[in-house]
Image 1 (cartoon, helix red, strand yellow):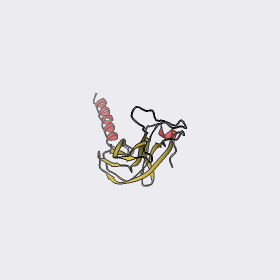
Image 2 (cartoon, one colour):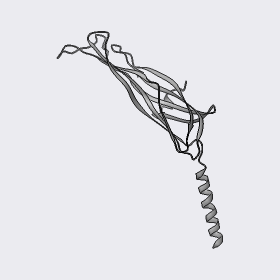
Image 3 (cartoon, one colour):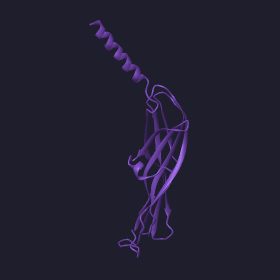
Image 4 (cartoon, helix red, strand yellow):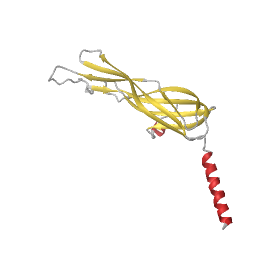
Length: 177
């Protein structure tokens, strides 16, 4: 009976020791789109109204380990689409890359930062009240740029340490450049 108790006690201590030594890759990365600035602008033609907005992502890295993590470099790519008013072509895919150095994330701590903003425009063709306004070439009467996602890679001492993409299928659709 005493032998079984000792074995059970040893197993319990071993499990507790393993859980106390969490892996360095235990970093949770979250990202949320964030509007930074909005300003209405006049279009190049009197029948055009547009609004320019600056959007980015609020990124948070959370250390899930019981020891601090040091010397991290966050590299990210913000993906977005650009549409031109009066053009029938599909939206252009664009991207903006950036980096953010992190000296240290404390044990069970968090670090947050905002990515560099991208400029997104919403444009609309307008006419007299009650009339229908259209382009003679058949293009849509409105164009709207949009964010399509973010891909984040975290490097520690030059080696890939953690990765995050929103949406997750972005990594199979796009290339890291």
